[in-house]
Length: 353
Image (cartoon, rainbow, N blue to C red; front, side, top):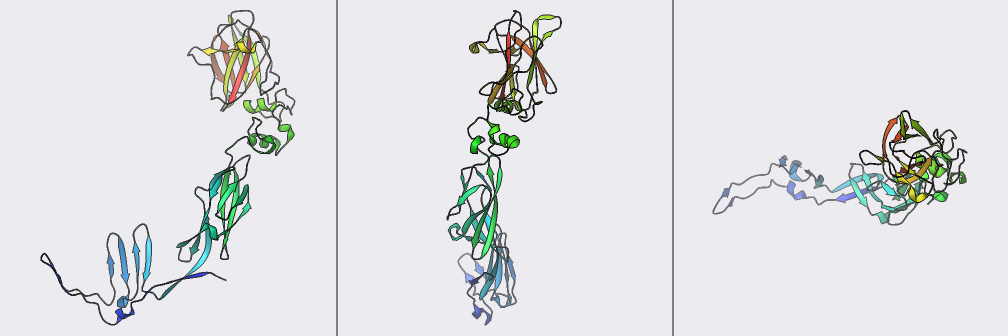
């Protein structure tokens, strides 16, 4: 059964009996002559309104400039048919585990709307990661591993409306078995699917001696054994006091810092500094891992705990060093210009925001 609404207006039918006339109006300062309202109807307008009077002055339609309003005066009754139930939320997004207030309105056949109290609508979740919608129209989002679509539904007086929402992955490391392990849930889902134990941070499912946490920080593919972070140490021809640290791949959004030490004591590692005083790195701080190499020719690092990966290398001298670096595609070369002693170890620290 279609829903209709009726709005009643008073009708001054007596106005049809005789033309309206105004008497003269005077004061000490002005005189206005008698005027007569045209029985055939007229349009009266100003900057703020327009009024179309009907014949006999019994009915009329008035509209006002924004905010737009329409009045139908003098009609015995006005019928409007409800054509749909419209749902809304501002904005149409909600952070995971947070809430968003929903609202509703009836759309009428003259394209006007009539607001409906949220408490009068029967709310439900049609699809997506919403844990529920209470009687007041307050929707609550579930946890997600990536931005995910959801649909809310409302029913009022036989009309059903739906509203699309987006639940935002505002907490990157909180989903299911992947929560709190230092790796973004979206990355783990991309390569391992949902709640796969092989996605654990210290595992090495592709057998390349670099664990998942390191491969996440380095921007590698954890299921491809050929996707590895490689570091080599090379002599500089004609420069016996210099060494080159060559590593790849360099990935956008990461920061790379070469650190050195005269021995393997963790407290003694210091970054190579460039001639401008910076550390020969790019990007910003975040999750980190490291990789190193050994010997003059170098090799790739092996996996370690807490996201670190690498092995020691020797060539050069102790103390801080001045360095320069250059990029060739995804490969970066950092030159230590003060490798003056017989032994020096290098690592590459990688940070992801």
